[in-house]
Length: 470
Image 1 (cartoon, rainbow, N blue to C red):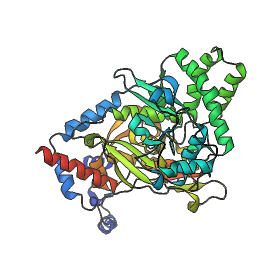
Image 2 (image 1 turned 60 degrees about the horizontal axis):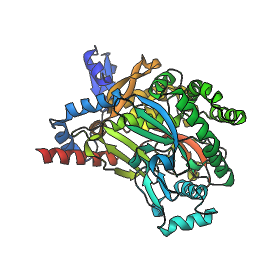
Image 3 (image 1 turned 30 degrees about the horizontal axis):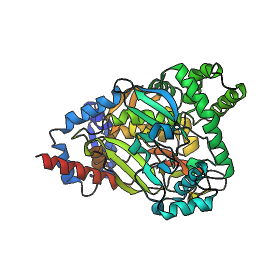
Image 4 (image 1 turned 45 degrees about the vertical axis):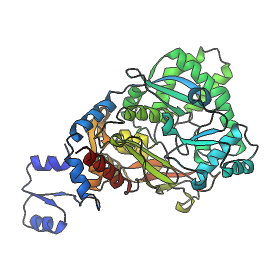
């Protein structure tokens, strides 16, 4: 039940909506008053809102979409090189966000692509890599989302990188994500120096094979269940994954120890994963995509099934509009910076990791991880208020992902395009910030929202389809 509904079914004598002067006057007379924040719908959306609200398919379609998302069980079933898994050759590259070309790519996206080209042996140095991509030939560039995958920050995936494989046993559908490098100067933040390439080669040569052996020997690892537990333990599964990472280690370390791999390699892997609090993020992301993809293609549904950023554009996809992207300019996050970095050093928002918020965790579940405010800014009351506010623009709660501090309410799930347009409330995302200049790496972390224009655009497409069926 929304805060507004609660007010109307409880006992205030007056409910004041809009301008505060009326409520102030009533308060002065000693009459109990409850105030409700309200604002008109987004500009230009009234006609489309009316059309979509009257769509005879909408209620059932959204109920089906929610049910499909909540029914998914994401299990980790394998770890495999991207070339073998997705058929990528040495000159094929995937990236985060909606489609983009080199000419429009941001600094961190360019840096990550340059590093990947060096890793794959296409070029020897950054200058040659830049020339390769600037030529516009000899390579392919495609979004991770178009290959059932997601990638954090720049999200660049190339053939020799290893990927987690998640599966929903009931449907057989699978999603994929690369392995997490840790923080600082790493490829996903646009760094491409020798230390970055050396770490990636170790991940391909040691980390991937050890994890593959452990996962195959362990059997299905219940990622959806781990997500449920970590939300009870202070994680929100976007910028805080400490408990999730340690639970993953609990599940797979016994099989690592008996895998037959060199003991020093196993020790290095355990040390690396255990020292990388963000390692589980790259499992949370494909788990969320696996759930949300179950709602794709449901005609009449207004549910958002993807939010993604490429460092230049922010894009969303909606269950009822197929694979169409609705895009606008990515925004710079507002938050805390590392060292001497400041807002002028930060690139606009980037990465597929907003798939966590799309599924109802991350920034939507900040109430379950109040410690996150120390990383991204704000306050604990802000974190609690954010989760409550996100419930105003979603279709349901996820009973598996409950939030203890809010009386175990389920995570707000299923962003509704029409509710966003009607309330003007934008989805809240907590995120890392990459340096705007290629090669810089991470410069901070903070809070960001999508550009408001993309939701009226999606609503207009939904309304057009509704009119077309009439």
